[in-house]
Length: 116
Image (cartoon, rainbow, N blue to C red; front, side, top):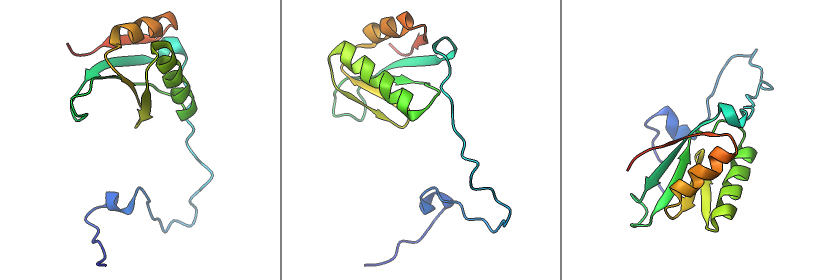
């Protein structure tokens, strides 16, 4: 099996190596979840790259991964469909954009409808 050559820093898998002896490893950045009324979310409709399947994508959530998962679970439950949380986006199966916007506005989120 041949070794893979590294073409860029991203090939290292997100690791950064440093020779700084004074580097503080304990300074993990923890993002706090913004209050609902300070969140600016975008509701997208998409079917590209999904085998023609229609999905609703919610982007722009600023906060912890746990809060994002909780919001995703709530939206999936209210719509009665499946979905997932990937790369900071909530992906809901089907075209439920109007219903999701309505649910988010009831919870005081600032939601903008993006696309047709």
